[in-house]
Length: 427
Image 1 (cartoon, rainbow, N blue to C red):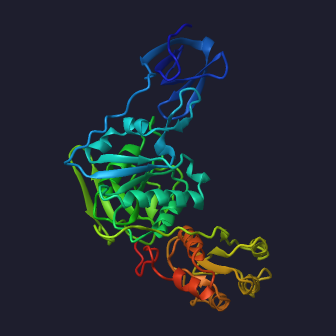
Image 2: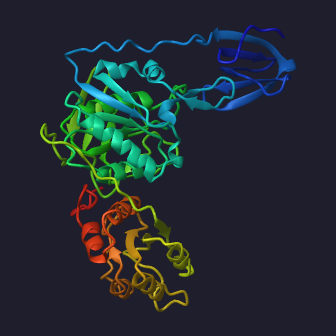
């Protein structure tokens, strides 16, 4: 069986009783033909059982230039910060996996529709990493780049492309790091890579561009509102969580409404406001406030858990911990053989700050309802009402970067700084 097909070509492979269409991959074994199906899965076929490999479309092998960045004076100017993630990846025809779109030109080649709405006058690439590898230093690096762009009077707003796994941590961090924000900061993503027909990247970027030029002067996350390619939501950076591992509408608002619905298609392009937000202000400068205490932890309580785990953090010099508690704010108390009350009091006397967030995700902590909660309240824990655990973790590091005084920490943790608290819970 002879063929002129090469890795990267779209082909149809015919066997005696079946045929398969997909992208030809470089095979690790000479007797196997490796194919990436349109579903995204790879399949290996025995070469001697193949009748024909028909080329449907040759791969583009020459280095392509991105669209020429001609400025349209009728369109607003924005900037993009690329940090990695699936939205910044493409199919590697040799491995069948995805690799980074390492240049802005490659990104623009995949998403030319963005230029129908805006001029992208600046692109910054502080790093290219999967979001599971990010930490507070990367959050600080993104914030430094963002401040520089936001204080450029030509730029109406910025888009940050980012992996999904820790996107809600980054959105929370930027919500606290960027003070006096007067322009939109829009984080967006893709659950499926650009080579997939079902990729959500294009609509997400188009909607992000609309929000980046809107009146919403906040850190927001923009992405699919449903599994269909019909519209996106803009979600507040401190009230959002990834709630599905693979769906295109993985991110949902928690205890809050979406700020806006965004529609972008051939017939309609608009933003419908659904909630309150801070409005754009043409005056003043964005201030970088990114000092961060990284000796903090996020701990999930489970039934029967030994409270001595708290000593692990204390002995290693941790300054604060957020405990995801059960129900209205409960962990094992004096009625249990594994009571946490004494240990929580002990580590606080030795200087550690202890905060409580809801393990339930939705709802608000209220430790005064049951005796269990009242006992814990007397121990000195800071109960964080409806604040998300991930947001609480980030905020605690940010607050401890300012002060280690417990009363000052408590005051700041309970102050609504970036919309992390809601007086009225919304579904």
